[in-house]
Length: 240
Image (cartoon, rainbow, N blue to C red):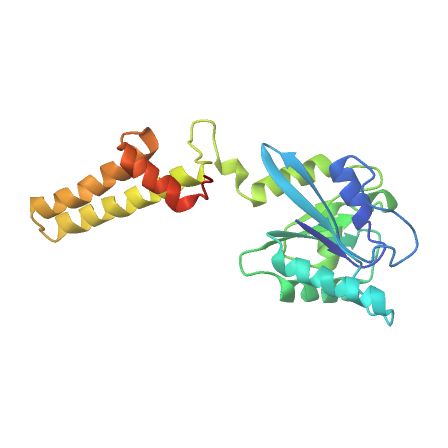
């Protein structure tokens, strides 16, 4: 989760509010953050890594330029990008240009969320602000300084990564070996289906059925000792 914005948009303040601790240095001086600051929290049982980035702007400062380059690189790596904008500002052109810069750096499957910060400094509603700026992108209204709207933001982030789609009744495979075995079993089942559709004889279908049972047996433990030892020695470095 990359947090991006122009200098003094409240990125570091937002990171601290999300983490509920003073993780990043907050200052009124523009360009304080020269490098990325990263930390993680767990929301709804899932670990999120938040990245506070240097403010993106035109600058002649060599070190600040390096920080901005890293910020843009993090935008390209992030699954979700939080674009902080000033809710109290009327500079529509600057906001649109900034959003365009971020859009050009986004990864193909990444989500972008506009976060209008500093709601404590304006009397306008989110609807009025959205109408003023004219963005069609998902947006939220917060005050990182006053920690207003933070819970709603956290809920929105969980929705963006489809955490809401996981229910208590669903099975989640967390073991890599089990996932690999189930994937191979699925491939074998697909081969059986294709064979049935093409009229393949039973003896050939039996081969794929045995493959499926073997991969499932890798999970349930119904495979022989030689198979297990071969698997262990092929994947791990075993000392004398």
